[in-house]
Image (cartoon, rainbow, N blue to C red; front, side, top):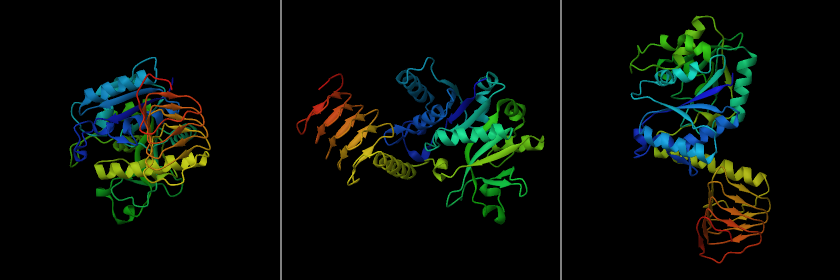
Length: 348
């Protein structure tokens, strides 16, 4: 049985003050939910179920469009959580999906945490399987753990003993830096065995997924925590300020990756490049340039200043300064006149 994933994407995100769903807010021109889906699929997990809620029809329409863009043989599965009653309640909405994958493992994660990467997902799964654990939490050690659930380990074995939320933690527990990222690998059968035993006897009246870990431990099943060395995997956005902070992190990561690949970026001011853009070595990118979508730029080009390329293919040795191109293909060694504006379905 192939492993699967459940992506929690039902939240309203009131503080975002958006008329659209929170998970479709963009980081570097790419919806956060798409970041998460790409990471999961990049880790080799292709069976996905998205739990929708607030403005669910918009999220479902986005999923259908994304499936067509990726040329999937089948659309993404999704289920509707009419009332948001906690993370475990969201998983309950996907119970039939889980039952179709008994005998496998399921990754459960948030649709608004865009920096969880395929390598971390695969490494956590490997530890999960090799240690024969019923559940493996992906954890991190941010510089400031305030507000996150703390990972409490057995001092002798290092095994996971508990996840203690900030509001329930005593002073020594608050000194722990390792925190719960909100992403988990479960054995499907183990999760199903406790899912409906989770109670909502707490201050919010909600059903929380970490309670499944407590129940599994009480039944002598093994639990562990995979500690990633990238604290950014826990980051999400609840408001526009936090969304801007995610954009800054993503921008820096993309520019550093391109420079490591031989792209010349002498001054990064005003340069924004999406995570799916590819650029050949010895290409120079100058200030005021924005490259988005599936744009592909060849080698030895000059891009900018003030170039906007959206889903554009540019060959080698092109010069694109003060131009706007959307959905076009530009052949090798082309120099476009300044202030040229080219639209889709054209080859130049």
